[in-house]
Every structure is written in C-alpha cells, then in structure tokens.
Image (cartoon, rainbow, N blue to C red; front, side):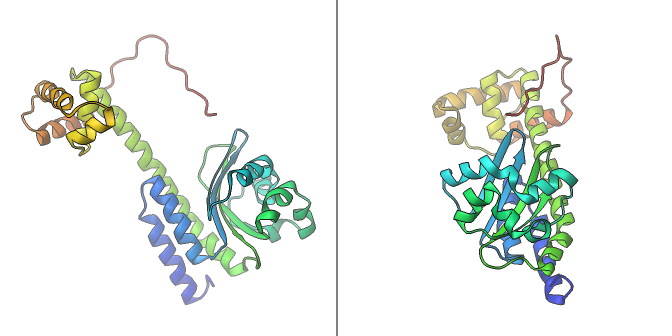
Length: 267
C-alpha cells in the first residue's frame, strides 16, 4: 500500500494532519484519530511502560479492572520485550516477533488481550525518557496487519517522531514562559496574589475568569489589578498585559541563595 499512489496519499494525509498539532494533548488526540484512518484497527492506544509506571490512553475505552490486569502483566507483551532488548522503535507485529503458542502462553494475553478479543497487534515508539517506552499501539480481533501497513507506519514514523519532539519542545517553552512571567511579575514588586491575577489577564482571561479560578470576588480581582497596573506603570488592561510579557522576555533570574533545590524523582 505504501508503494502505491493511494498509499502515498494516505501517508501524506497522515503526516500533514499530525504535523499541525503542537500542543501535546492535541497531538495525542490527533494521533488517536489519524493513524487508525491510515491503518484501521479495533483498538488504538498510547501506552507508556517503565519500571515505575504504566499509563494507557485507549479507545474504545476498557474497564478499570481490565486496565489493572494489563498493568500487572504489561511487561510480558512480546513487542515491549523486543524494545527492551533492542531499543528498536520501528513498527513490529506480534507475528513478527513471536508464535501464536508463545503469545497465548503469556499472562498478558491470558488475562487481558485474550478476554478483550485482541489477537493481532502492531506498535511503534515515540520519544520518551530513558528506560520508558511510549508506544503507539494498534490492535485487531480477526486479521493480522499486512506488510504494506507495517511499511506505511515505518515510513510515517520519522515524521510522527518529529511531530512529538516539536510538541515536547513547545510544552517546554510554554512552561519556561510561565515561570518567567511569574518571576518577572514578582520582581516588578507585585504580590503573589497580584501576580496570579495579572498572569491570568496577560493570557487573555477576563476578571470573571480570574475570580472563578482563584475563588475570590470580582471586586477583589479589580483591586488586585488596580495595584498591579500601578506597579507596572500601565493605565489599561492591554498595556498591562503587554508590559507583563515584556518583563517576562527580558527577565534575568536573581541569583539563588543557599543550596540548590533537589529534583524530585517521578513516581
């Protein structure tokens, strides 16, 4: 299929749809809808596996009890075991790496895939932290994935990986911008509450939005903004927002006092 004109059209459509998604949540939703249009499946999931966690986003949804069974035995999935051995993130099928008898002997098949009706699966990986795999997984009941479908996924994968890296970088820039904005407002003399209100306004929120977000009255928000505007030397909402972002762009962090903070490990 990937070598035919229709296959190339499917590939181009898939890449075009995914590359336009910058936000991580948007990218997740786009992947979950776009990839199965190119390679049909009965289930589609994004699955993160590592020594300390199992996280699954799956459509159609399954029960909490089923997910608990999967989490218990997920490391027996033959495709995950292949990745652990080789770190090869290309698309592989169950039928590429194991026999039917070997698959049915695993507890993950006996407790999760078998009762759910999954008999065929193909997966490829996306960027993630070391020792954790983030796999995009397609599963079917009744027919295996073809060589052409596997080839199409492997042709698309470098573009999907780049789209994921773009989204991760976008998220990192957004987090840095948030931190810079908060720190800049604090260094400009705003109190913690004034800075919170001003952040929301700078991002386009209304007074009502700020009041609901912070659990205060509209009048309290107005008072905080009056003081924030005065400290920022602004006389209007738009001028204050522009001044806040200008301060964030030019903000230089103050030297840290005392020992550096330890980084928390992820649980």
